[in-house]
Length: 382
Ligand code: SOE
Image (cartoon, rainbow, N blue to C red; front, side):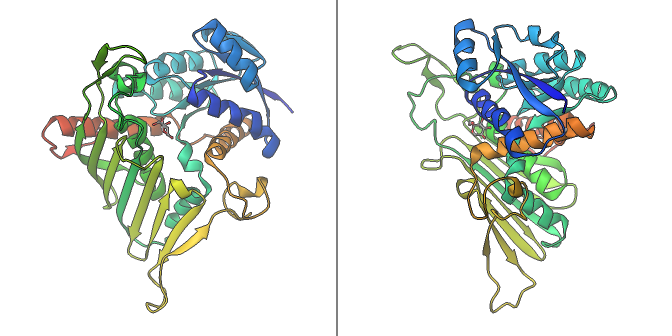
């Protein structure tokens, strides 16, 4: 079986999670090619060296560009903050490497357009690209999409999506890159809202066409680090809310915040259609609630589907039925789909064009919020 050499850029939270998935994917799933963890890239020699040893990478480098000229590297996996996505992704595609890029695709629509164009040119040369919207790979959510596609919910009227975290409650929490617009692009909107937008469009197989948004920053200044009195400005949103219209006629409400006390990773989505409803909460990620409105009214009610059976998406490869999966498995599933697409020469999803569509929605929310929450069309193009 042919080897698929991987270079991963970045070794903080996402780099650790992706490393775990690269270590696992070929041992759990039957793949058409064999992933090999060739090189981990980072900015600081010492730090990347230690991380590579700990995470299972054969080599390490403090220069990601050096990975692009290697013949034994076929994939570049980007786990850096958003301000470097465009440069790394476009250089890698140009060098003929398949690219997996963490979400959101970019920090601006202009960057995302350039990336999607580069990905399209590369696609014509057989090079694949994908955006890391890992929650599509939660078995219960993948099942939810199938139920919607089968018409089990009838005509879709509503999507209600929330992504609730609380890690910024403490006003003394430091000013990390996630709170700086020049590095992260936006705050809760891009970090959490991007997942919601992708997920809603994925579940409905439909696109958001216009939005009406609101953003706010509750704590304007934060300490520059532990043990210093110096502070710096928070330049991103702490919380974002918006309503949306879908092309197919559904209405959506979206909320993303880092200030929902007690909610740790509460990604919730509910879909209501003319024939039923679905509800999901990532804090109980193995469960999907399904209401079938066509059942006898006397006994109809939400029922809890435990999405851990061999017939559920991705599950057959794992453990005996009923043995629940967790956050990291979604990344293993993501790599299973990406590597399979590369090996079978098919197009992985979501590709950079889908990442661009999400970016256009985020941009429309920001423009709406800046214009007194005016209804704003999502910009055109791919
Ligand atoms: C931090 O808010 C974060 O790690 C996001 O960046 C991820 O995309 C999300 O899945 C969990 O929360």
